[in-house]
Length: 202
Image (cartoon, rainbow, N blue to C red; front, side, top):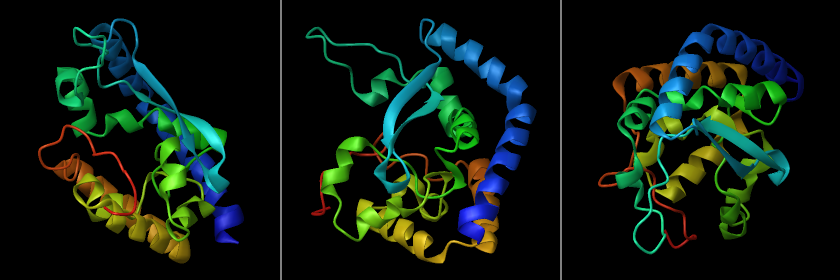
């Protein structure tokens, strides 16, 4: 009952309200990133959602497109702009994903939508993370976010699938707010962003 009806209703109601409230911030950040990224404030990328259905996730573009002499993109750490670093540190880059929640592609709480190329790398248990809609925040995010190993992150994701409830979602939202204010778990040690998942040997 909660997962199939109440949770989607809460998602659409809260995400619509939150987007309206955050609209002034959304506009300011969009303008700043448009200037920093030469007219490209948004980043759209294909991600697998519930039942591995592919959708386009929308986020603020925190890295520029600078390339080396051979035409290859520079490492993430060198492409992260000053305003982009601030937006990521304060989790403002997640605001556009409220539109994904309103559309029904995502939920406010659930396993984070990862890259499409990871799909064939999951084992059967890890693939269960796609039994629910992906979320803006989730159990793994409040238990280490990008500082924990991939295997631990997937364990948290599947645990959430097995234990999804209103009380758990409320707990995750509260812990997320605390994490944002503390700026915890934004990146792995020595990395500007999270490392790529390369398989179950990790």
